[in-house]
Amino acid sequence: MPTSDVFSPLPAIEAALRDALLASPFASTPALTRAMDYACGASDASGGKRLRPLLAWHSAVAVGGPGEASLPAAVALELVHCFSLVHDDLPALDNDDLRRGKPTLHKHAGEAMAILAGDALLAQALCMLARVPAPPEQPGLPAQLVADLGEATLAMIAGQVGDTAHDVPDDVASAESLTRLRWVHAHKTGALLRASCIMGARLGGARSSGARLTGAQAGGVKHEQLQHLDAFATAAGQLFQAVDDLLDVTQTTDHAGKRTNKDEQAGKLTYPRLLGIDGTREAIATLEASAREALAPLGAPAQGLHALLAVLAQRTK
Image 1 (cartoon, rainbow, N blue to C red):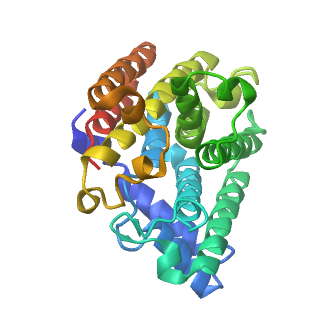
Image 2 (cartoon, one colour):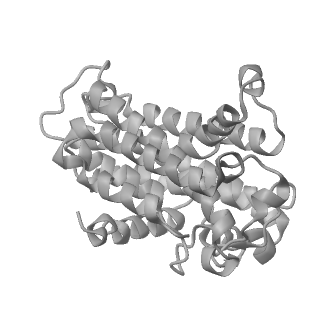
């Protein structure tokens, strides 16, 4: 699949994101709505890669459904991702002044508004999923989607705690540094990427032809398909973070659109710190191969995920 086709869902995703912000219960509070919009980059095309919505879209297609079916999950996932960035950038956490090439929200609108806008983005995401129409044969689908996103958000927060407060499970704390690094990344970054694939597949499966499946085949998608997508997303999540760690030490702030070299300055565990630059590149290649192997049983419908994986492995920002 050509790269242009990988990103062809973006107009539909951006339109759905703008609609969600306009329909938000907070729309009657202009300053808050503007802050939420700024955080998402919905009005000025500064919203970044939209990786999580794209994963949801292409995962829906990978299980035989239409990509459009994934839009409720795609938007909810992006709202949570943007909430996490707003809060991560705050002085109490990463203390960043630049995000996606523009001032971070707390620099733009103040710390109080940044905190409240992040809270609102999370609440709006969960409300959206709770309102997803349930197919007659899958009445529990909205609740399953809410649970998927809630659990992934909790895991993401746990990973952030491990990254900033160094509070991790005892078995992880006593393990080798690479095991600890992978645990943090699997939670801080990987959990939301895994949820993107699983939630997109649930919605795609609910709309695929002949989707009359039992509860054991969760959300109208075959259990085996979810397993393959989970394995893919697990490897892709580690790959994404390994690339991110590499870019932090090889790219400039101007090119990346955010402050670089900050992890090394903060003394954080990273792939380059543990494996070196060449070792990190080897790890990325190994993870890419693992992700592709996981997709193989899904066949041609997964070509969008294959193409998106190539973009992630080769990105420079």
